[in-house]
Length: 178
Image (cartoon, rainbow, N blue to C red; front, side, top):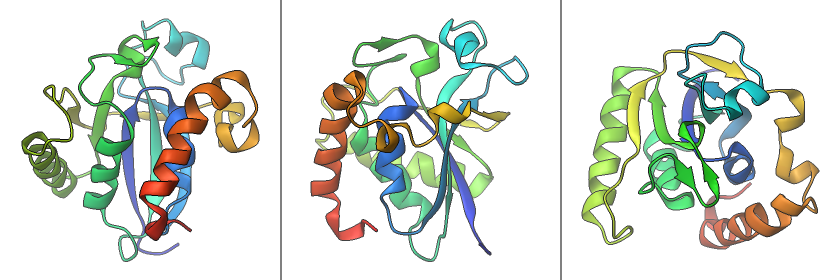
């Protein structure tokens, strides 16, 4: 894994987008976690209160020779609703906010450019509220959150919410799937 980069994205519940990014060519690792809060090593239970300041996120390790950061940001804007503040579907609270947490200035610039392009398109009728901020901190989530959909596809939330999203994604992006 030489010359890999990292991307950190918040898109509501991390279970909902974990399987999506795992499926892409060039993705070396996907880890569910918590970012940009004020508590060290928070637990899922603590983050769910909305009082730690963290967002549920994915930290993605990718090979930029296979898939670019710009492509990942573009996919992010297509696989969740970036127009709802602190909410995705029935999941509500600041921990479910839409966010791009950049690792360097180049990523910030790319994220802003992709966001502007998406805002000018007809993809979303409402304004995009995705925050673009430097990654201040990141903590990996508990082991049972990792690869949750693929390990629990018949669990109620997965079959009702995550499954349809993953199937739609796989159809739209089949050319770049592993």
